[in-house]
Length: 92
Image 1: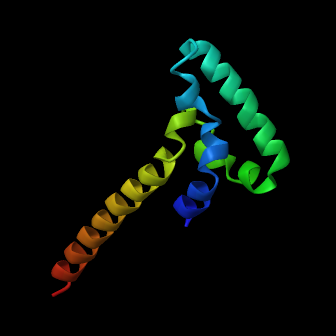
Image 2 (image 1 turned 180 degrees about the vertical axis):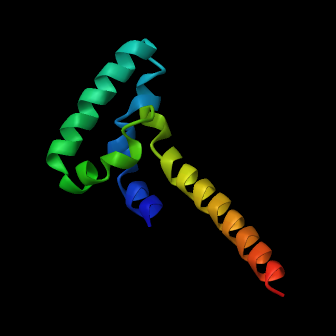
């Protein structure tokens, strides 16, 4: 679900970073893109509400938290399944 919400806002999240990298220094691009994203968050309350998913990452990696969350869920599901198998085996 988060991926769909973020995907719909991807152009606002990237704030032109990858396009601008071709013509400006990386530091200048990042600063300008962060300012643009900040303005986008002011204008779009849904984007601001989703900021907990992307704030920790560089602009062009806005999607990373979604995959990190899926990885954690999968790891926890495997651990839960192992615990369940161990519990079932122990009581037989």
